[in-house]
Amino acid sequence: MTAYMDHKNLANEVIDDVRAVQIADGVHRVLDRIASAEQHAGRDAGSVRLLAATKTRDVGEIMAAIDAGVRMIGENRPQEVTAKAEGLMARCAERGFALGVAGDSGIASASGDSEVACERIPFHLIGQLQSNKIGKVLPVVNAIESVDSLDLAEKISRRAVARGVTVGVLLEVNESGETSKSGCSPAYAIRIAQKIGTLDGLELQGLMTIGAHVSDETAIRRGFEHLRRTRDRILASGEPGTQSCRELSMGMTGDMELAIAEGSTIVRVGTAIFGERAFI
Ligand SMILES: *Cc1c(COP(=O)(O)O)cnc(C)c1O
View 1: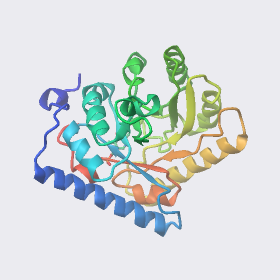
View 2: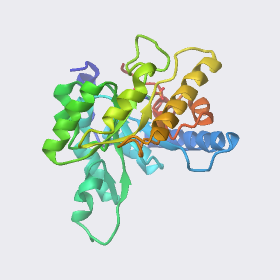
View 3: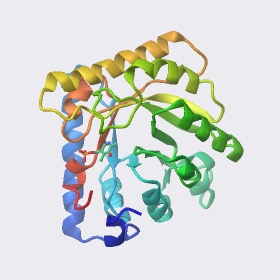
View 4: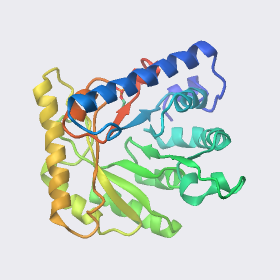
């Protein structure tokens, strides 16, 4: 178990007003950055979705982000998904939002007027997933963005089929080649994606990458551009199960403008919303 989980009660739901305002300001600043980057790149307003990267944040902090306009969240660790899911789903349901698979199964709307459509808040897993943790996340998450091998995809597929569900999958590609990063080699991405497309219980929704950890903006952009071209080639292949491979999850606090200029459809942002992380 990660050490910081011993320091902080991630299920905590009560935060003070100062913290809530800080988080709301962070969300508004990020939404403004996204809107101007869309405009600057000549892209449609609303074509880039904000995913709040909520690792190390508690339920109260995450709900403050949702109250300020966040409509998609992503966790890195299955343990954190488990620690927060119940509280998050309950607090979201109170506000008329269906979080995670609650949106797929209609749990959140079942208690109220069934005619009232809940707004969905997708819940993604964005960090590495060990195969023995697949069962922990499937009851909660709509999509797993960190699938980096056919082997892992096959294991998720078997578990999803056994549960009778379909889970979204993004193939994570290590565009920077940095050894510290997970993700499959760009050279194999197309073939792996095409095979994932054929697996039952999975919907191949797109590709994910983490930008190069360098100061050279040209190098960072090159990785994002390559991910976009890879996505385009997968779509153009017309292979079975590749038609929904549209998402490009790329861009974080430090490089979201570059990613949006290269076609990102989901930016994953933590620090710019919540501030520096105290742990990890
Ligand atoms: C933490 C994290 C982010 C967000 O990073 P920030 O720099 O805090 O915005 C995005 N993607 C992944 C996979 C992460 O682990």
